[in-house]
Amino acid sequence: MVPSPSKSSWHTVIFGSALVIRLLHALSASELFMYRHLIDDAARFDGYAWKIAAGTIRNEPLQVALTPVYLGFLAFFYKLFGHYWFWPRAVQILMGSLVCVLLYDTARRLWSERAARLTGLMAAFYGIFIFYDFEILKPSLTNFFLILAFYTLTRSREKPSFWIFFSSGALMACAVLLRMNTVLVLPFVAFWILKTYLPTKKTAALAGLIFFLAGYSLCQTLWKAWFIQTIPNQQALFTESGIHFYIGNNPLATGTYKAVPGVAASPKGHTRDARRIAEEARQSSLNPAQVNQYWIQRAFDYIRQNPGKWLVLSAKKTFLLLNSYEVPNNENYDYARSVAPILGLPLVSAVLVLPLGLLGMLAALKDKRPAIQLWILFFTGYALSLILTFVTSNYRLPLYLPMLLFAGYALDNAIQEFKQGVPQLQRWALFFLVFWIFCNYETFLSKYRYDNFIQKRIQFYSTPYKKQAPLQKTKVPG
Image (tube, rainbow, N blue to C red):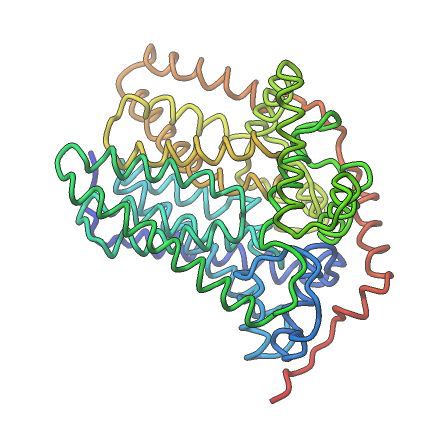
């Protein structure tokens, strides 16, 4: 039975639990080398955000693709409080705790109070969420905007209004700017709006879609206008989808991130080297959009010429997508668990969430309520976006939002089935066992060695980039 959406004391319990465990992680791990030194994406976001806050960026060229949303987020706190990592990390911890509350409240509206509590508690103590909420990286913020967008759409069924569609569109725009592959979720949202409202209110359905797209377009336009005004000399696109699409679809692709020959595995390499190779192939000077198109065309050429190999590659990506191994990129969750006291605890992990999520989604397929269909479409759209690119832990993080919801529903179902008799429970236990074996089967990837990971941070911090993004604790002038 779906409970009344009135306030519950469990909102406070979930938020408090999530906040406490994240604060304990922050306090116990803040002095670790991996949190005192930023590398790759984190260092570049930090360095450019500091220059924006200090007002020294206008005459400097931007040669890498960086999202304006996360740059603006960091620059805001650097402008107010100086070059301290404490403030963005503290706000991300608060946002991450709120994500858990919104998951709880969503499950409460979809299913039962028990399913909601299970969902909220799993999210609060989900290790990978705790890990990313403390990183100076954009995954935590991406999750925050996505849960807000889909929570808003979920509530639109209770009291539809054009403002709800407009605001959810604006929130989706922020999420897309943060994680470019999220754009593939948009057609699924548009389909849901039309499918949900067209049968009864055709005019309202079309107007809702228009307002959703208007909110999306306006938010994107405002962010891009601010970005261009702040950094006029930009030599890269906001999102370099072309090279990322090719990384996931080429003869050497493995299903996860693997550097393309001739292109350095760094944001600058994705711009500088990708442009050099494209211009050499075209034998002419190209603008960023043309470079992007060149790599998209190369990926499609590979798919068209090797359909069988591409299907096998897509199957590998699907396996990685649903496997409990957190594939490292610039950050390594397994290494963090080995050195951070809180992350080393037996926290909730993908080992249980993925098989339970699949089990819950299987059970929810027969439920035709639009709000539940929305979350299934979210999972489908985002999963497709990863299968078309590549799978890493940070890219996969948003997928845990629907999976936690369905995992809570699966546990609630199991408790209900147990009360009805052992035969019913045996049926679901069999499905769970199959999903658990599949999701926890050893991957074909070689595990990222801990010593290599920490050595990469040490070597990076000894490079000249240290001079651009030092651990300074100065106030922004003026």
